[in-house]
Amino acid sequence: MRVLVVGAAWTDSSEMGCVRGLRALGHTAEICDLRQHLGVPGPLQRYPLAFLVAEYLLRSTVREPFYLAQKALVAQARALRADLVLVVQLLWVLPETVTALRQAGVRCVGWFPDAFTSFGRGTFLLAPWDALFFQDRFIVERLRQSLGAANIHHLAQCCDPSLHRPLPLTPADEHRYGADLATYGNYYPYRARLLEPLLDLASRPAGDPERLTLKLWGARPPRWLHHRVRDFWAGQEVTGAEKCRAMRACKIALNTNHYAGIGDVNKRTFELAGIGAFQLTDERAALRDYLVPAEEVATFSGPRDLRDKVAYYLARPAERAAIAARGQARAHRDHTFERRLTTLLSTVGLPLTG
Image (cartoon, rainbow, N blue to C red; front, side, top):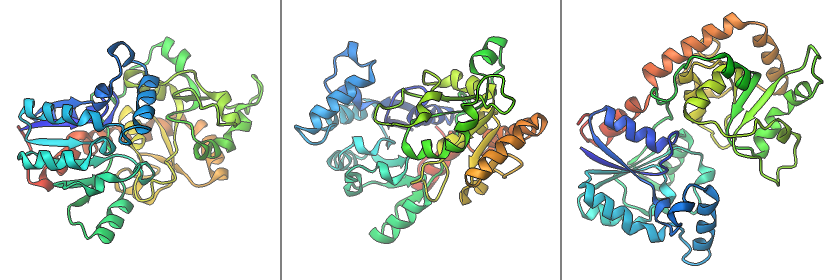
């Protein structure tokens, strides 16, 4: 089967995870990154700011930033002779494009790997999809009930064992990435508040026995975020092998789920497990569906418990290592792109292997 995956073509993206997973199942898969068709000159496409400027200008003129890129999507699907177009970035594809693809005999499926707060205008709900998959059960239940739509399904996030794996650490890696506690991702107020119970300890002077070394990897904190969490920015984003090393070099890899992720857990849950990092995450009811708390992952509930759990696990390296090892084995066994895509294809009635 020939599949065109629509979304971001950077190594760590869910979209590229789908491409690699589909190829591992024996299918032919290509990526279609519509940002390349927004009129941004080639030399500038390596800079994220160029895409933000282009999107802003298009939003203020044609209203739909990816309007100009729809013909490129249809053309690439036609050139590939695609049997399936799998859209991860639902906001990039207009309903009329899905209609045109379906009329041409191409199956169209969406897999939205984010919270409902990222729905934008939600125009994708008007498209005639073969099926839509969401990572959050809350979204599935709400849309199924409200819209009476039987083609909406739950599909959890996952890890990519080719990327998220326990890489060995050199002394240089330990020096660069080592920390008592670290995490990666975007800065936003909710995450800043969740980290507050640890910031007093992280602000203690060097030599203080209660001092906590804290490294927050990710893009530069936004200027509008007036919060002391900015002081602990590690200076860069980490992806691929660098992410693996950064999370394995820290003693505790902290995972804070987004407040709008109501009925499931985030992608970082599976990535950290697959990397073989010791993961401490906020308690979510759905977590037990994927990892066993206190055996394959550690959890906390509220600010006081966060501080207590950090202190508890920092003093128990052997327990951390055992939990990390069990979580890593579980993630690579049960929570991979190959597993998730097999579920997706089976649900839609498409061939599981090429």
